[in-house]
Amino acid sequence: MASLATVNTNDIGKVQGLSGNVTKLMNKVFPLTVSLSADKTVYAKGTTADVTITIKPMRDGNVVVPDSIKVNGAGTSVASTYTAKGVSATTKYTVTVTKDGVSASADLWVSFVNPT
Image (cartoon, rainbow, N blue to C red; front, side):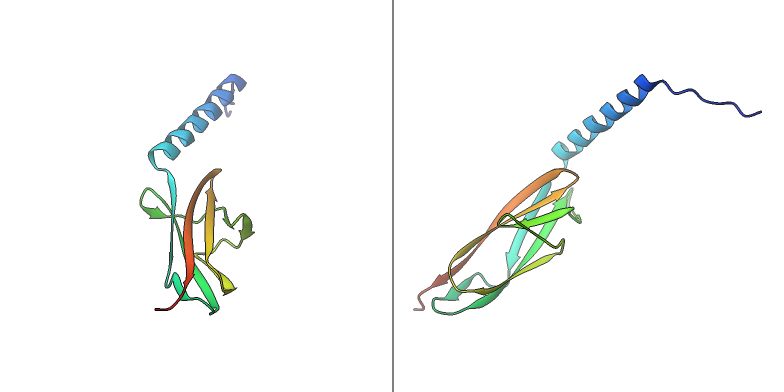
């Protein structure tokens, strides 16, 4: 005859609370970070360019796949690159990645200057 285990509902709450505390600790010890890069960030004034930004979200030295990515506040596909088409003026791109309810942001500027 099989024995049945009993579960105290108070124990479930304690485990859930412990799990939340472990998650908070992990986020503190291994914070989510994001770095941005582009092949080119300075262009001649009067030109137009398609700017591709490489997005690298990391935690504990490892690249992670974020749950969401926003560029200048607008949601975009969860991909490692973002391309802005037809850029013709100095623009700041703020990229925010979110993973497991934690967010990290970084900025990248693309500048248009007078050629010398």
